[in-house]
Length: 105
Image (cartoon, rainbow, N blue to C red):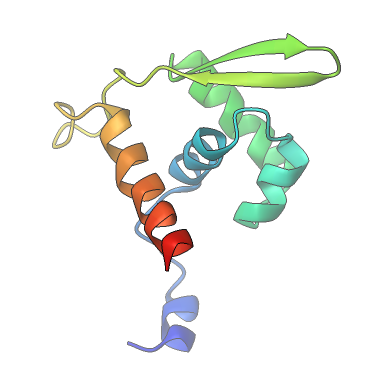
């Protein structure tokens, strides 16, 4: 399937929740506005996802001056029953490792 066909199908392997989590893992002080722009969602959607992740215990949010600082709880498990034995740190490592490899090239 080519890229045009992928775009038409409307689905991806990672949810926006995973993308927000990975964006925060890359930059724990990332603004919601920047997070939304990077992922390609609205600020409101990004804020809702951050709230979901915080309420589920995946994130802790601390106010530092005028900005938020996020801390990921790396031992929390993935939510789907078939991956429930995996900590979210495994997902983060998989994608942040890939980003580091691309920067080295």
